[in-house]
Image (cartoon, rainbow, N blue to C red; front, side, top):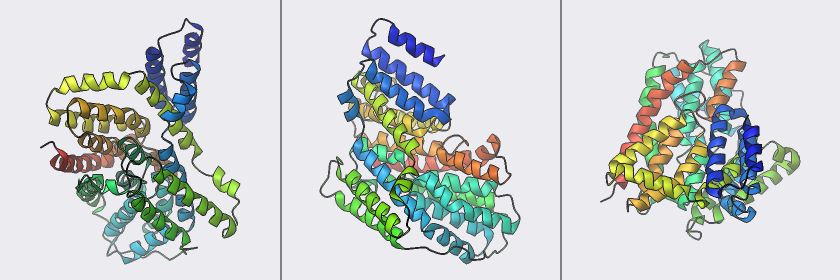
Amino acid sequence: MCLYMVLNMLKSPPMEPRIIAITLFILAYVLFVVLPAKRTIVAVAASLLVVLTGTITLKQSFFAINWNVMGIFVGTLVVADIFMESRVPAWLAEVIVNKAKNTTWAILLICLLTGIISALVENVATVLIVAPIALALAKKLDINPMNMMIGIVISSNLQGCATLIGDPPSMLLGGYAKMTFWDFFFYNGKPSIFFAVELGALASLAVLYFVFRKHRQKTNLIAVEKVKSWIPTILLVLLIVALAMSSFFDTGFSYAAGIICMVFGILSLLWGKYVNRVAIIKSIKSLDWDTTFFLIGVFVLVGSVTLTGWIETISETLSSMVGTNIFLGYTLLVFIAMFVSAFVDNVPFLAAMLPVAIAMGEKLNIDPSLLLFGLLIGASLGGNITPIGAAANIVGCGLLKKEGYNVRFRDFVKIGLPFTLVAVGAAYIFVWLVWKPN
């Protein structure tokens, strides 16, 4: 049906580029929801059609892609891959379980470790790192691992937006707002998104404690994890330092972060080849190319609606709806983003809304940071509400299914919804108090 519509559009008399852009954009986003497993094919096909129909030129499509963000994403993926293979995160999880005073705190500390790793490593990789420890603990205690796995998944999604390299949404924000690694901690002299996320994490810890409060027994895991090498950990730390230092000479966030991440990615590939004896081609093939090409396609689609004037139109409409009530506009943006992201992939949603938020800030004559930070919080944390809200959720549920546990929609929402409301609520208040117009 969709293919028939597209073919008809190509055969019909030339349409106004503005109409083609919004038609392909909406069609692609609908298909992201209906066919989540085919999202990359949809994004790439739609972006090609944008060019083939003459809506934007090939040159415009190339420059619509934020190559700095792509460099950060691909380079970080490589570093994260060897970090995971080093088994340092899994070893740390074992140590935490054995040091905790009881199982409740062991689970909470595992969720905390998940969050810390997720602030530096992509969410899906983080879940894959920590999940085996959670499953081992559940088997030793003879308990259902479902709630524990849900706690790990939502903790990874929460902390993913705390730093520039934590997850694609924060990379997108950095790209659009020209924010450096250090800007996620302090921006224009004020506490930034990192502290809002951490406040949300502390508040939501109470929800997780309530969920796991009955597990009072003390448990020790038999040590099975051995660190293969500390070199990947050192590389990750050096990458973070390099990104922080880049803030001083690339204040416009135009190229340095992407180059730095790619350099460290290449170093990681070489380390894997000459130390782990892993072929470079094999390492490259194992990367998340699905998400990489999905991001490229989304950048082109968003670029097409931006270049044809739709972002300006949408921002003017939203600005006229809220009038001069900035608090109302901020509140609507946060909670609409939160509930939309519960069902729609937050990457394309955020990519579409970031330029809208910036334009809204200009229309309301305020610093757009308030709207941008609120949007990131809502879009990133909203995915925690449902089992289909984020890729990490789907992976976590898939791991449970392999163990014989089927996660029902209500099982996930029972933990994800209160966790999200508390975390978003705390971060939402923090951002407003710090970033509201004077």
